[in-house]
Amino acid sequence: MATEEQQASAEQNGHTPEPVLDIKTLAPERERVRIDGELYDLAIMADFGIEEQQQMTRDGREFDTLWKASDELTPTDKQRLKQLLDRMFERVLLAPQTIKNKLNDDHRQQVVLAFTIAPLAKAAREEEEAEAAKEKGKEKIPTTEK
Image 1: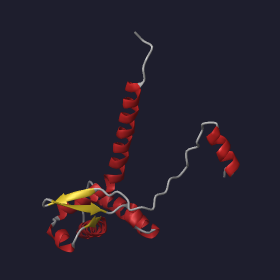
Image 2: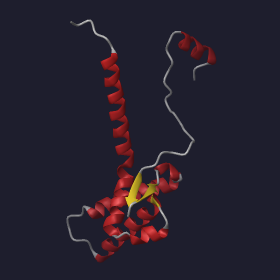
Image 3: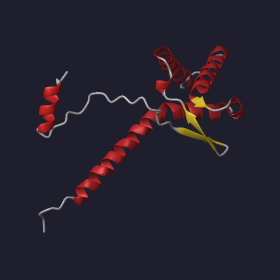
């Protein structure tokens, strides 16, 4: 770890080191889904303890394997697929049970998929915004070209 003297020296030289990790304890931004015109939040992985995160990851992998199976599923596998979908869905949609009960399996799968890809979509959006800001900054820099 850098001492306070090292940090002060670096800052005086115009160099502020970037942190390796930036933790925020404020309420996180959440992705949302619209159901019958109303918006409902999706959970984020940080909502779950480490054991639940690991369980969600295992459930997702098992669901994906069963979903993509090339052979017809056995009755036991079909039951397991439905069980996994329901368990993941119940964890990720932060909505009243009356709303959850209105959704069929296709809707439930879409919600789970939205939860799964939300971090990737957010990262892509942030990257696009950073790139756009960078490009906008370049536009303001005067050039010596004639």
